[in-house]
Image (cartoon, rainbow, N blue to C red):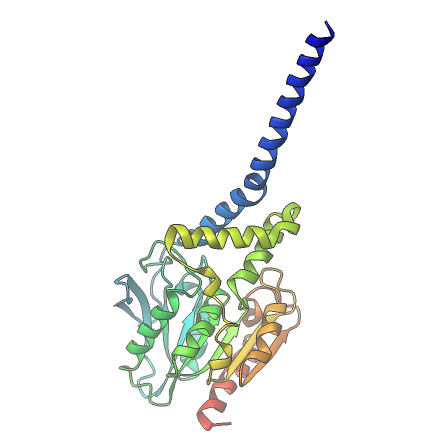
Length: 305
């Protein structure tokens, strides 16, 4: 009888150990791999806003990216006498038509204005958003286009959020951009990825680094995209153009710490922290002050100051 009881106890113990082993194997999948894959796919495939009408007399422009993806933008050349051009880059999940105020104000300031839809956004093609890996090549193609539009005094650029990061990642390879303004940029995809885990899955905050690392590895294995290379910080030391960093003091989406981390990495840069402004809300906070600060920055580049 005792032997039977001992056998049952031994069997129960083996089953318990098996469950412990199964839990030990599946726990990392549930706590790290599953959220990593889910967040990675969410980052790559953002909802595509519906296109809207092109304002003013801007012309719709279509070009091809280096990988053959069709890119669409609108070019407002109403200021025919102007020899300055500016390209405006929207953020993730947005589209070119969501920058009407900036287009109007740059038009009034005498700039020819190009607003492209980023790949995977608006009317542009592309299945995935790559946070600068492919978008920086797209921006160089747009600069090729502007090279033919009479921009003798310079091509300038302003980017918001992801558009700001794409701009900063492009600058080391694109000397034709004379001066740049980057509002609410992230310092690297890895850094903002860890922030996103803490924001979206606060209960897993202590695993943010592991989840982000697994997510980046997953994207690399499945799509051949190394998101760890999507980093404005990585190439900042090679940027020759002056860079104005702008960030809202109350930005809880991409914290001002990202711009503070980027500031010392550039050869010539300034940081303007706008009190009370939230994510990409600095322009709306004070449109007059914003345009004055930005156009003064561009003027200084033309004058060589």
